[in-house]
Every structure is written in structure tokens, then in C-alpha cells.
Amino acid sequence: MANSVDVDALGPAAVEAVDADGQLADILDLPEHLRDALWRVDSANLEPWDSPGGLVVAGMGGSAIGGELARACLGDQASRPILSARGYGLPPWTTPEVTVLCASYSGNTEETLAAYEAAGFLGARRVVVTAGGRLAEAARADGVPVIPVPGGFQPRAAVGYMTVAALEVAALCGSGPRMASQIDVAAAQLDQLCGQWGPDAPPDSQAKRLAQAIHGSVPVIAGSGLTAPVAYRWKTQMNENGKIPAFSHELPELDHNEIVGWQGAASLGRFSAIFLDDCDNHPRIGDRIELTSRLISGQAHTVQRVQTIGQGTVERVMSLVLLGDLVSLYLAVLQGIDPTPVTVIEELKRELAQR
Image 1 (cartoon, rainbow, N blue to C red):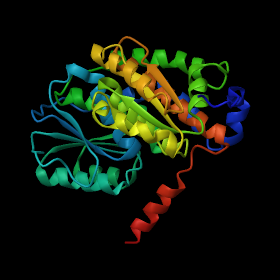
Image 2 (tube, rainbow, N blue to C red):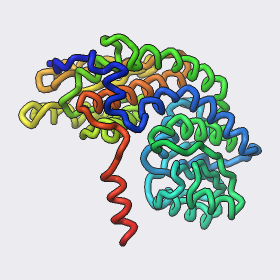
Image 3 (tube, rainbow, N blue to C red):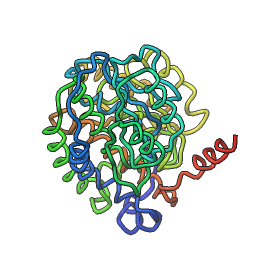
């Protein structure tokens, strides 16, 4: 059963009352971020090269998700492996035939700095995308190309820059075709969706309705194929912007385990199921979403099915990224909290630095 919160409380005045650091503006700037990112990659003056081993995107958090979204955008057009490395090292099979894109918005992420050093030790070709910090300094000292991104916002708000950087580097190293025209089309679509889903939109707009429906519960988001990394993005945005626990999984795998866990959901608390669907999913995925929704509905606070919007893969991926970002911000507004600060992450980093 959906929560009875009044979605009129998600208008511009309500957002402004809690969004002290302007997270909304960064979210609504996603279309411009995509366009600007293309220019910034061009400004790095990178010449194409050949990496038969494919591409590894090394990063953490909001800086890493771009690699996974880029892989989803490329879909079956990817001609070589494109994988993410979230940690202090690289996959054991990394060789000089692999390109490593080191992505760190701040440039000071310790795991990404370690991966940068590991790539150098292995002799892999390196490219860096960052706003500065120690990573930019090391790259420039080593003669490694740097794709510059603008400073001034939270790493998670740089998703457009990180996704485009990964797509462009994938094309440059021979792992897939260039997607610049699709990126431009996606940006134009997002301009329209910002109006349809932003605070000025009607109270029954999709983003506001979704936030109302899942408010007061723990969201469990499921994707498949193209939407699997987007489901993870929704989860992390609800963690950081909404300041709530959230979890993600992937179909059809969750029908072989997680579906059973829903038997005890209602006795433990309020859990909402959100299924992210796409027109290009295998037909059986649609059947699974329908059946899974029905079988768990008695234990779920609410069950929601959300469809991608657009024709090309970049449009469809980024439409759901924007929607999830806005839903996560509206969840913060419904709780009366500022979506921007991530105090516990900063505290963790301070304590790690002392060890």
C-alpha cells in the first residue's frame, strides 16, 4: 500500500527549503553535462589507439558508475571487454594490451590512485578523468592524458561526465563505436524530461509519484541487461541523497534466490520493489517482472515498474539515471533533510587517513 504523503510538498519551495547546497541544480544540469563532457574529451587532444585487451574503468562510487553505464549504452556494439575495477587493484588478467581509465572526481580517491600505480607497473595504457587532486598531478608528471571535468559539485553529480568519458575512451581504444550523436540526442531528450519531472512539474508527475510511493520504506531495485547498472545507480543515489538503506539486484538471477526472501519482508519492516524495464530486454524478462511483482506484492510496501524512455541506448540509460536522481532527491525532501552532505563518508576518510 502506498504512503499517503502529499506530493504537493515536492514543489520548488519545498525543495529549496532543504536543498541548501543546490543538489537539484546539479541533477537538472545533466543534459548540459553530457554536452560539455564531449567538448572536454575533445580538449584532451587524444589520438585513437588500439587496445586488443579492451578497457578497464578503475574508480569508486559516483566516479565508477560511468564505466558501467557506458558499457550498458554500448550494448552489443561493444567489440571488446569493458569492465569496472572497484578497489585497490586491477583484474589479474590486465596486460599492456588493456587500456585503464582511472576515474576519480576528486583526484584523491586512494583506491583509484592505487589502481593508477598498478596500471603503470603493468605497462597498461592509462587515461585519467578527474577534476584535479593527486591523480591529475601524477598523470601530468607521467605524461598520461587527463580529461578534465569541472569542480564544485559532489562526485555523484558528475555521472554525465564520467559516462561520456568512458564512452569516448572506449571508442578511442577500439572497444566500441563512437556514440557522440546518440549523446547529443539523449541530452535533448533530457532537457524535456527535466521539465516533466522537476519540482515545477505537476504533483502527479512520475518522479514525484515514485518518491511518494516508496517514502518510508527500504527500496529494493531490480534491473536487467541495460538497466542493471542503472538499478545500482538508483540504489547508491538513494543511499547518498535520500540517506536511506537501499539495495539492488538483477533479473533473472533474483528469481533464483531473492524472491524467496520476500516471504519474510513484511515482518521485518517496509520494503518496496522497483523493477527497471527496457524495451530491448529479452521477452521473458517482462514475464518475470509481471510474475515476480504479483508473487511478492503481499509482502511489499509497494511494487513499481518503470520503463526506459527513448530510442537509442544512451537515451534509455540516461532517462532512468535522471529519474532515479530526482526520486532520490525528492525522498530527501519528504524527510526534510539536505540531500548533499555525506558526513559519514568524510568521517571514514579522515579516520582512514590517520591509519
